Length: 606
Image 1 (cartoon, rainbow, N blue to C red):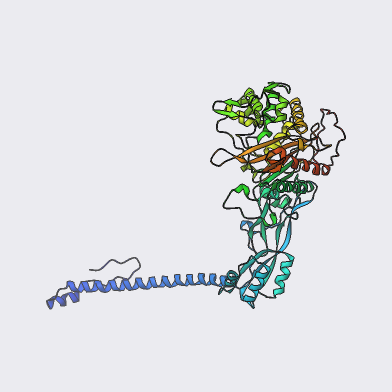
Image 2 (cartoon, one colour):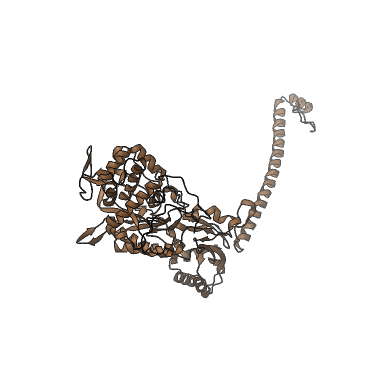
């Protein structure tokens, strides 16, 4: 009996050879034991062959892995002992691009640019006296942690340590004076804002993206830097500055006046916007407190975000702005033909609606004309006008001015500045909204709304970018007559009403005050905290600019008592602002008021 063999193999020996079997029978032994022994011997031979084959394969596989790990180890050793090279961007293998277009104001003055600077790093293996170098580095850079830096530089086998991303020329020289060959420099680009705090919330700031030792990608992190990041980094447009509508001189004057008003009236903060009433170009936008974008602070992790210097009150801040909204209710009624400026309106206080009462700051008597309602700022009179309009038509009217959507400003923060609207827009909500409560919007919304209402009735879209050439008129939102009547009423507010301290001789300011109590987080309103606003235009007979000024929790002791209303606080600040900026806008004070022609030429952006 033999076992079968595979193709090409030699015939195997039989498991029961005849001669041994016969001999075993002659001796009386069991011949099956011969077959069993031969089978065991054959299996041992097969096992030895298989083991030899497996050992050969393992040796080959081991040699392969040894070669791979040897190659990797050699490359790691080469990298560890060489000077760090600039990393490569994975796409197409191109190097890091740090180029970024400049940002300039409307007159071409630089607001943001790239600057060559030095980065500082260390090769600990090349350092002569690490403890001395650490002492000197901490003296030059006080924010460095002495013990942590010493531990990093003294760590066994460490070949590279980052120290600073950017250095000033003075810091470079101070590090040179240490004289340690293990402290090394590399040239890179950084973003520089030569005007510091000016236009901080407009520009936002930039930081480093992908970075190596000798190059770093500069990317926008906020403001127009972030919103226009792709445009600023476009290789085809790097040499073409991004021109904003901001005027640097106006921005500086506005910030100085607003800061003075905050200090004088003990306010927590404030904002100021100057907008071209016909083009929507924002000439200045200031929010205080602010920051230096060269050293942009980290966002606050605790507390009220609106109190952070990073918070843009002009765009992100949505507030109940108070009586500045009354002109929209009156204009709505005028445009619908429901009233004229001389129509008598019930102003008997309080107005009772169900279990709610609406009152006025003073008792204005049983009736006032429509213009009188605006002049004295009657909540009751405005609420009665809102009842005539009805919530449906009121909502449709305010929607035409953009009060229900974020402003389309070219800032990354703008989409989050969404107005807060009532869940149910009924009769009561319509009455409270008519005098600026129950709906929250930003000062930028208010600026665009006043511009659209008072420029002759054409909608404007706010922009932070400078228009090129003639700007076409927007869609009509109110009639020319309604726009003119609204301007005349707002002029009365300054000459005879609540904004008597807002007049600037020769510039014929018109505007509306707003004093709104701040809502409590749990419901209700604070009695001693408010937001004051003055929304104004000048000159009222041929308006060119809208000025929106706000102060947060302003107060002043005057005429024997503490005053918190807009007429005593924010109005004088706005008047001083107009007095400062009007000459910068090439506007000469008029000796007497010219007669309005009712004709306006197409405006070129200037």
